[in-house]
Length: 500
Image 1 (tube, rainbow, N blue to C red):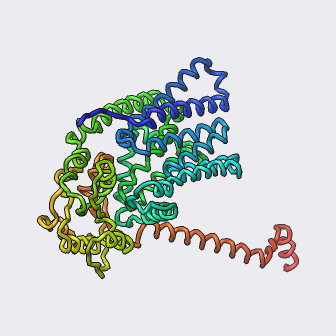
Image 2: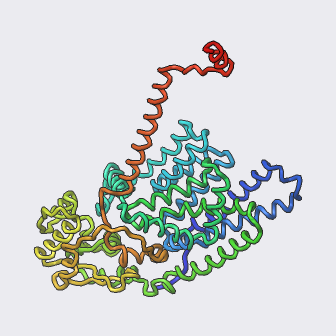
């Protein structure tokens, strides 16, 4: 297996676009403040370029950004398009902004929603039916789903064999996860978020907070492009959604680049030096195949472990160990039957696997975890051709394929398990979040409760609405009584004289 340090195209281009955005904003700010009178033009240009370069290095050295760029994910590309859309708005190129957001819609709907929502409110020029039509037209990209079904076999891995199934499952999953983190886990998630931001921005994270406090305005695009992804992660049930904070790093770097023009030189140089140091540390640490996962575990699983399973037999697995099987089947002309343990509580999913000849027994248990593993146990007991993915080095996602009936403990260990609700404060290693090691070490199970972030948000909304309504009613009541006449001092003296 060959090793190489690969970076996605979105990473390189994002550095350049962030540089251009900061440089443009600084030039606008200088003109508005009439700084041209006090400084030479050449000096202004050089300083602006230096501040813009610091912003680019901040983004480029982020642990979160590097981790999601080396594995060539969609997040770096989507973040690049998000910054380009903002840059187009700054230059008042509304058509290009609409086209760029349309591309985001075709790549990752959630990143599109973040960007479109903020820019749509910030720039009234985008509130145009024609520009909106240009953006929405890119939804035609998803026609590849029914087209691919017409011309080839579909694995039905994500329920995406139809447009309705695709959007129903994607937005249904988004709604199921968003805001459903238990209130018990909110304090820990908040601290974890701060630590992830620190290893991604260094001293820039402190400068960022200082900049927004000093600016004292909520009418800042970069502010909301930082707050929305961060808030989404803090209240999200899934720990894996930390990847959605990449736009928060990009726009946070832009804000820090602008803030560099307002801080003392010692702060500026310290921010730059720490950013350069983090770039070296994070690039070295996240070098997959050398310092991170030297065994290339996922590639070994694909090339060697899946070969153990004969055609027509069942693999009982979860997460990526299950999701990779349809690709393996297609590329190797194989016919392994993948069953996802994570989805076994779904009656609809059970119907699908039963239709494929898998024997199982459904359960009446009300506990989600027991539903999952009791059904899995029945599959192992009633079918002779079942295999499982057994973790060997969890922190590196290293698994081996083993016969299920000979390793029944892999199924039975979670039956009857119940996580007790308690306030979580102790933070996790931010690098364990970023590398994914947290998923198989600390973050195995979390509490799924109705007393969650969404519940707290709804209570706050109702309280604010009730308070606003009460103010309106009392104000209306006061107007109904009319104004009470106030006796002047002269009138009071006259009254006292008459009484005498």
